[in-house]
Image 1 (spheres, rainbow, N blue to C red):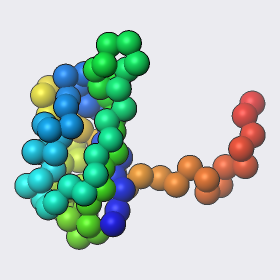
Image 2: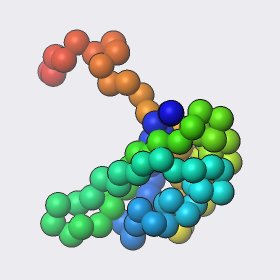
Image 3: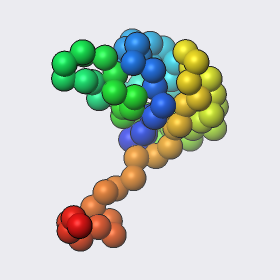
Length: 89
């Protein structure tokens, strides 16, 4: 199972619309859109999980593709704990 980061999403994006977009490349196992606390709209990014080969196909097929007027950024989620010592400046 691979976790993908999806960025540059419009505020009107729903979990259903994102699932429909990614399902052409395989089964979406889980999805989490980051939403604005006050408006309830998408903050522009989210995460989803797919099997490895399906995730690679989704990245190849959707990264840079236009979705509701925005060019998507699709990549593997980066592990934030690697290389980061927890210090803020």
